[in-house]
Image: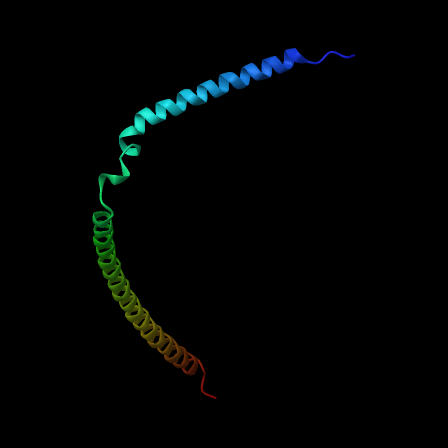
Length: 112
């Protein structure tokens, strides 16, 4: 009967034991570091107070979002106005170019 590779298994199990021990140490260190934040009791703040706080925060965010929407609309109007002005200037310059080219073209024709 062939022998089982118990030496390799033992080494692998030892490595897993070391890894698990290190992981448990890391978890204990994490728990100690963050205990002040994670160990707060659920009953510390009544749900009514939490709900009121959330509603106030949501109202503040609604106000901010409404102000941002108004600002965005104002900027959009300004950009539309500027785009229209650029369009008008472009039309004027195209017309001037056409007029100048016609004048150049008519003056370059020599009389018969």
